[in-house]
Length: 187
Image (cartoon, rainbow, N blue to C red):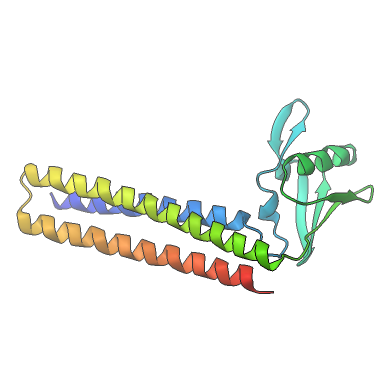
């Protein structure tokens, strides 16, 4: 029975960790006014008949806080890279100099910053919902264990342990959202 409890707790932590890593990816895509290669993560490009991620056909770098350079591995792909960035509708206008595509990141307006903060908080809430769903499945598992012979005291202890894990993950989520909010609001 002890082994089952340990496996349950490890599984719950792993599943809650997935919610946090999903949040990390979502927050990376929110533009905080600084250039970040992750901003182009959702950009796909047609490459010899198949659709691939932009990062598979080009080097993406940030020479400074306001610029992203996209250097295709093949020069003839420059126009395709520009089209892919425009079609991705991420609010950036690509320019090329014949060898690289240059993306200038405009400074954020106050209104846009507030909108991004709302989006960050929304992503945080979604992550918390994911954590709560994992908690519910864990609590259901505890009830099954109780029916299969786990004592009531052990059930209460296990439920308290699960709640501590949930609180820990919720605190992590809140800290990540707060950090992103601070990042976005910094001019």
